Length: 192
Image (cartoon, rainbow, N blue to C red):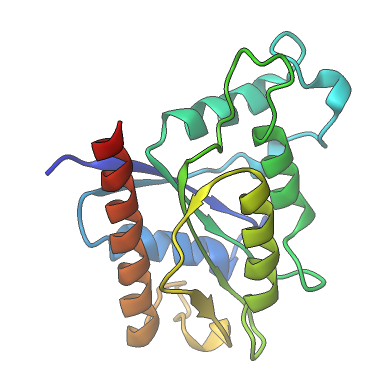
């Protein structure tokens, strides 16, 4: 069985973010066949600017993200919930990734196998943010894994003091999501 590369993006900039810890848990509890790399450059992306969104003018950090997404077999996006939606920094990254105004580069997100999940301290976790993210990913034409939904509610109770995911039910859901992401990637490879 070959290994598929996954670029994991946390929509949180916090050092102790449960969403980033959830991506680390994905690395730890990887059911196999996936190489999961966590993207660390979200903070460095400038605000989206249509005037700069051409191959000649685009900031190098944006070109690097676009390259990494294009080269990855799939994406794993962990989103916190801000004001019932995704954080601005995550939406900004998706805006930079969703364009090809020159019609020469291709769209990095188009048909990209993508799984989403999220962790939040409230009783609903990130249900509304994930719904908003799914709506964005319909527009960008991502190939989104539908089930299982991983909404880590009351996230402060599911990680230990060192940031390790300890909740067995969440670990099982996470592994199911990763298994289904791998299956979606394999299906795309068969069609290619």
